Image (cartoon, rainbow, N blue to C red):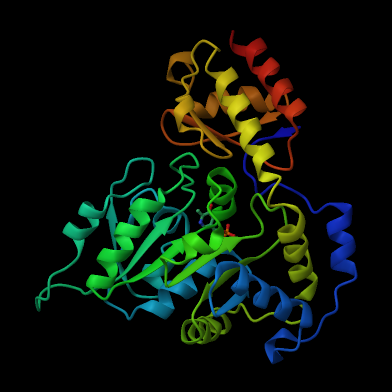
Length: 341
Ligand SMILES: *Cc1c(COP(=O)(O)O)cnc(C)c1O
């Protein structure tokens, strides 16, 4: 099987498993796990934030962040195709009690003017805008990188209105590797940010959220409330540490493979790919002209051992990762050509 469904399908390598097996552990609810503590200190340093907190998932990282920055009835601005608005089970609404204010972006990228127009005025009728969430890279935006100048402008606006900013950086290091901009530079413009170890960094479990001490103290309480207090979790923190030490620079290979995949797909009749849109490891393409639905295209590919996911009414998504080599990508293209050309 050539698994292009997601960068979450990566499996821990023998070396990563070795690091997990050898991890020094303790009860992290007592703050006693040295491997977790080391990881949290190192990530805080890496992101230029005072503190960080290891959490079980990206969904929990975003939820504890929203909980920590808001009160029920507050409003949170985010992009309409964002992960939090679409794929986090409405937790921000159900659990944090906030109202989400989605804005329509271009490949997930919002303009500062749009956000300015969406900020609520001080009026007794309105909810209060308390938080702006951005996503970098943007999953439904086919891995789009949020331009730094736009982030800076949005941060300026947020400061003027006393609004907090949070970054869903599930794939932050894909943006860093593609642009050369260090993670701590992106982090400067956010009160809090998170990234996932379980996507392209290829650890089996875990995400981390960073911010100032007061924010992390709140996030820590909310993590416990949500059932995210973990005990000898150093075995997972060791996998995360291994991922940080070994799997960041290699994301470049995933980006190269995505570019090869996109370029070759574009040459197959019926497959429409905007090759300009391939900035990182996600390739989204339109299959309308094949005469088949995305679900049918995906089914035909799966029967030949190539896995992708339908991504809306006309689109299919393929994601490159440590789980697929350049050779796998070339094989997948040969199979697709065989089926559709
Ligand atoms: C995967 C993902 C998340 C959530 O991570 P989980 O660990 O699956 O809960 C959040 N944001 C984005 C952009 C993601 O791609």
